[in-house]
Length: 505
Image (cartoon, rainbow, N blue to C red; front, side, top):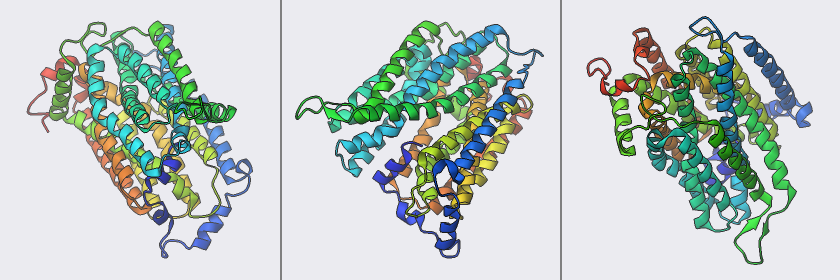
């Protein structure tokens, strides 16, 4: 979200064309009058009213979620030991996500302050997403072989090095930082979740309780995003960007300060990982190092995808939903600008989005006690499809804003629900590898958006279609659950015992 507006400006993906509504949809005068109804001071305008209503809803839903008994299959709720384990994971996870969020708002601004052209900045971003796609898969395979804790430490080290490169007004050094950051991002979105699922199962906790952990994780992630925005703004404003010496390529202060703050958080993360986490691997025993090279883990993961229809459907849902989410990230700012001269309060809008994501996490916490994740996700995909299809035919700012708020709520439900479903379906032995393979089509979608000019109609038509396909795939997964696919999900031995008749695509 923080990168969306400046990044769109650098890659020029049809912003001007997307802002011009066709004559048969809505007149410019009508659009302007609707937009003005949300004008004025941000916190006393319609934007502010929506924010405060969202906060009230988040508080209410959080209280309702906390009142849930968290009862598992054994008829009892999480015990003290499980809560201690939960805190061990969440402390590390929150630090990892805070370090990532701190960097977002000022990546483009830093490159721009160094005097690089819009084209050069766009290439830097493409390099980051490309490296995540190419090297991330192998990073996931390494996590399944050398250990998830080890790769968590590697994530912190790579991200520290990436942040250090931001001090150099040198294009090659900045590109190196983007590549390192891309690999680190792949580790972030696979290693930590893989450690949680493996450790949860190895300790024999009720499988129903993991949904509570995912709900708390993504609720706290939204809080971390808001906190990071405030801290990054304070750090960037403390001192202007200054070269270390006259003519030096090394700079300090200004837009490099949020990255220094991220380094400090990453150092804390290193300490937390070393102290709080034990090592686990992709294998039948969480404490036993898996045999074979990372290439073997990659091969076995690809074989699982090819032979198990449930995992393939799961990957399709992930790629299409998260791909639509990235398109939304790049397009929401021009859509809400509406082609007018008045600048909407983007910071307040971003905060409202994060609060709605918190609402979604709480909704999942409530719904997961009664419904399977497949059922929850089916509804979410259908609602999200309708929400993102609307801006393809509407140029009304208030209506599109309501659709975006609904979509952000769906995002908040999606991540914990999908985390729980992945924990049930993906074999432990290749979990991190499969998670990163799921990100390959996602990164292809992002690169497609970066490299092409998409009008508002085309972008949101594609989003609505991808989400509709995801809903169909999730319906198929729900049908497979009735036939008993979950009886073998997540077991390592299944990699060698897939049925060639029932599960072959």
